[in-house]
Length: 327
Image (cartoon, rainbow, N blue to C red; front, side, top):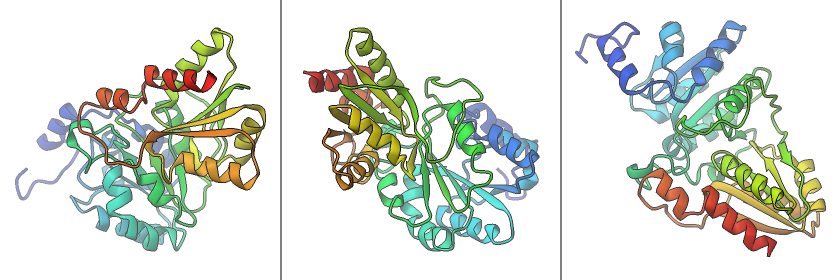
């Protein structure tokens, strides 16, 4: 891009990016509908217009988009400042950098003053594959969950992400959305209902209840269907909202099932499993708990499919774990 050229929907540089990075993540759909519905949306991105899924919003409303360049920390502080003017800023960035590199700015500039900034942390978990441990976001829930006023949502497919973003309209304070690469298999139909702080129950189970979020929900759903067809009783809760956690749903499942199995594309320390463990311990639950995810280590490097298989986050791996618990 030449020194004088601006990144505009009609520029050659933008068109090239549109071909290389199509809007796989689809947050543009929700941002467009939110803005056209009256929400004062402003989108910000540290030079990740297309790979962050904001290309369509930028193309339709370029005046509502700010490309901040590769300066994630400044982007968060800019969003906090915009929020004080009445805008609702949406910051899109790679999860590993948005949650970890910008933790200080999120803590002091956004959460402390309860600004309505929405964070779209994409390429979370192991989805960056060959980019390596520096780009794998397996600690983001753990570093953001202790922040006061912070809401954390981990949608499991595009339809749920759209519904979760639309549910932010009347929500006070910041929200962190944890999303993958936009290649997640379909689970929900368009128009699925979503309430912040409420789990989506797929099955009730008395032997094992799986509580999952994000990417592992789809393979867990396949496993639950298969084992239930064999005569077992396997429940499944899609705990898309990690904070505030649906305490009633956890306790109801723990009161009915012999074992609770949490599954997350995240370190088992500080994430969904830790949140569920806190609720069960504080309420004297007698159900057994097993947390499944990445075992307190830096993740390996490889294609995402291979990493999911290695960490038993794919269908076969989850099935092996559930069968072990059933036995």
